[in-house]
Length: 275
Ligand code: HEC
Image (tube, rainbow, N blue to C red; front, side, top):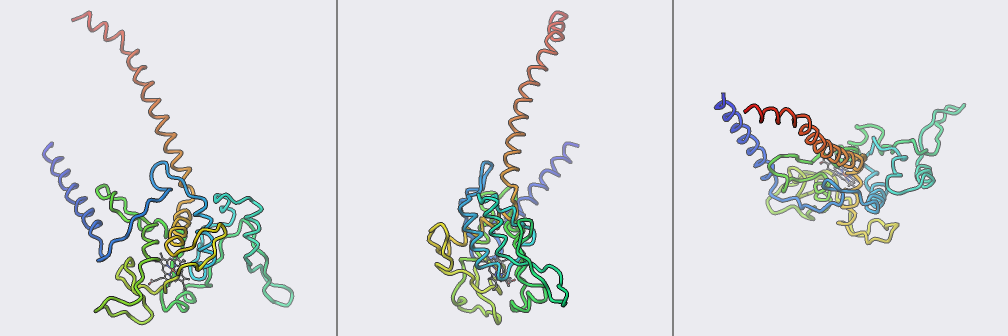
């Protein structure tokens, strides 16, 4: 029996080791750079200024092609905006709102409960505008590359690093010997190194409301923070709850230890006398 457990244990280690090796080696000749994200780790919190800047980059640049279907304007209060500021932000968008008596489509301005509108009416339209490729929705992309392998936490590529990588590792010309397909761009981070998205960022493309200098790297990090938030807006609550549970369990463990001691005290004494 014990032998069987040992064998199963060994098999698990070999398989996990194999998986972690595959993760570590990756399928690209280029390594994705890691960043220290303030929201990483068990006590991590979102940098609200970065979120506000990331929202600006999304709104002014990425939203021309990428939708954000699962985020409503009202959620932006998490960035430190007041309800009135969110209302004003929502008002800048227009939504179809039925037809008038002449059969013409009517529009209304956005409300906090509205969701970010998609840039294209359908997938077909999105592909037609993008050389056949589909710009993926941003709602979950921020967490799409999070590797949670037991053996490679130190070198796994997180969603945010992947996004920064995609945005900042374009080559102006493909390396010697690489044949780029029509309308494709060489990118170190994207799988296969050919991506249909033209480089969307260049230095000072946006003028940040808070005066931060908008280098490509800065914009990439801000929008990556924003996308990670979009994929997990309740991250801070989750971590706080985890901490509370750990504190509660620790106190409970200590209490149970003393309860256990006092319950068994007399029994143990009795036993001592018997012997
Ligand atoms: C002109 C349209 C356009 C704009 C603007 C644009 N993208 Fe894209 N994006 C695309 C397309 C198309 C793809 C799919 C590429 C492919 O499949 O080859 C893509 C893919 C991506 C991917 C890779 C997704 C994956 O599958 O791994 C990321 C990350 C991304 N975009 C981020 C951004 C960010 C951040 C911005 C704003 C700074 C942005 N994009 C602006 C068209 C665009």
